[in-house]
Image (cartoon, rainbow, N blue to C red; front, side, top):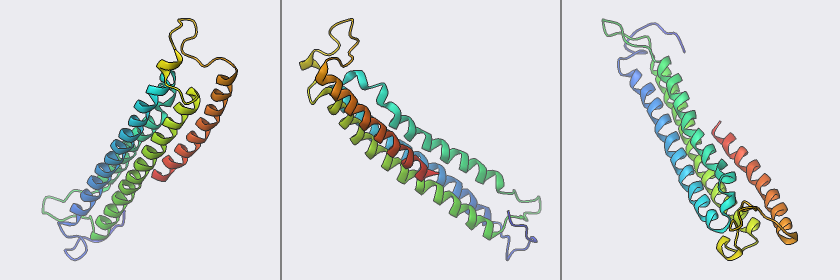
Length: 188
């Protein structure tokens, strides 16, 4: 924080409002991005569960990664609000307009980047999870293949062609995870 001498020109009483607006923008936009990514990725898991029900637990990774974005926003908002100094009993503050603008910009940077990351994680998660389900199931619905009807197989993929489908699906899953990791880095 920049230290300045208290005076109305550099440290007006309304300067902390900009810092609080930055903290509010950060937490609101980050949680909106988190909700958006969770919604899109969750819809993809629901669609994938129709084709390949045994892959639902494996494919909740995008939902968890989108949920972390809200925590990023909370952490940055707490850091910003802790840096805002309270006015003295006489109504003077050591918090300058410069600090207010800096905290507003920091809150907007974090919030908008988490919003963009949430949308990216949601889109990649939805498309990737649905593609994984189609690839792992061989393009067939679970009820038409009888997946999970035998108590011994546990719904796992078996057989020659099914093994090829599972290997291709695992390669697709690795690519999905790499894209999700770099999308999460967008928020950092």
